[in-house]
Image 1 (cartoon, rainbow, N blue to C red):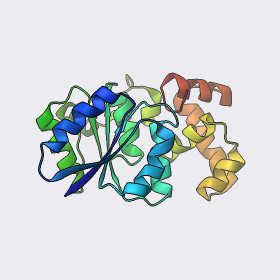
Image 2: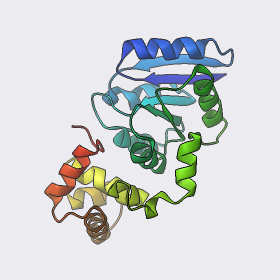
Image 3: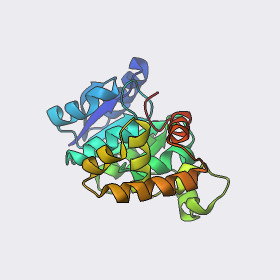
Image 4: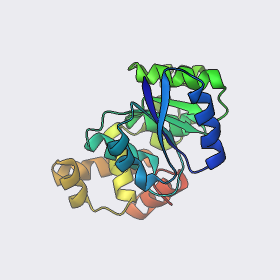
Length: 211
């Protein structure tokens, strides 16, 4: 049995997803949540195998949720679903620990296949996103600059954008403050900005943190 938790702030969409999944004998929907700040606690409470996580909900951003799940050692497989551009939002989500990324234009068969695949320990991405990954997205100058950030750089970026100081980030990640400063310098260079305020503005514009 695949235990699934739905996280999306649109009741009608959740109902549609639930109906699709409940037609699949080996899938059971064990809970629903409509705000980001309740996701992690509900994962602890109902212990799903797969979390279907909308990329944009009220509350903490999806990258913050992925980070908290990882820090809490909550071994749930996360399948992101969204109407946003695959390259711009899918790559950071996958780098931050998501097991898959599926567009909200999915068919019933695609959704069920995605859930089965991430539950089995594999990744799920669309053929077009897989092609872009294989082509080396971080070398493509046409992509958003944050796609060239490493996983740790992206993590530091989201923490800075949420208002944390470099010392607080160092304590949170259990690393030396000088190392965080090095990450900051690389982030500034890759994003083409000069100040912390510009980092925050960039993160908000690209929906990398809660607005």
